Image 1 (cartoon, rainbow, N blue to C red):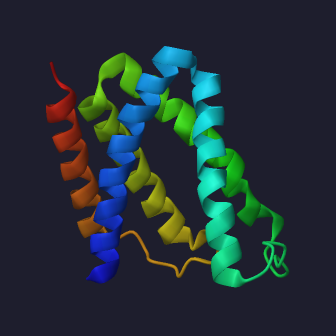
Image 2 (image 1 turned 90 degrees about the vertical axis):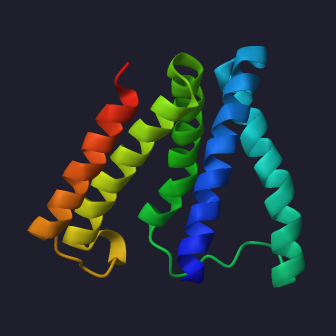
Amino acid sequence: MIALAIACLAGVLMAVQGVLNSGLGRAVGLLRAVLAVHAGGLAVIVPLTLLRAGRSPSGSAGAGWAYYLGGPIGVGIVYFVAASIGRVGACPATTAIITGQVLTAAVLDHFGVLGLQRAPFHPVKLLGVLLLSLGAWILLKE
């Protein structure tokens, strides 16, 4: 239950971050905004990592190369979220983002991609995705 509350908090922060990033993108340009967001994140995480681990963040043995793609993918996420919110608004963009996340997560879980425990996609889950898509359509309809 705590993990789901943390995930919900992440969703709240993502929505706020998207609006902030979109505004920053309008002010300074999207690429500069993405750079500023990641520089700010780096400025926060480096001291936290050093304080918590007590050493430099060089202990990366054992992680495959694919796991490092989160950083470059994060650049794309920040860029595309800021761009979409700037064009269509926070609610429509976030609805499309969540729909894409759930559909992708279902596929990743189904196939057990990148070490995930396999969670087969059953017809009941398909009903949930269809209801989510219907809700997204209602929210996006003008």
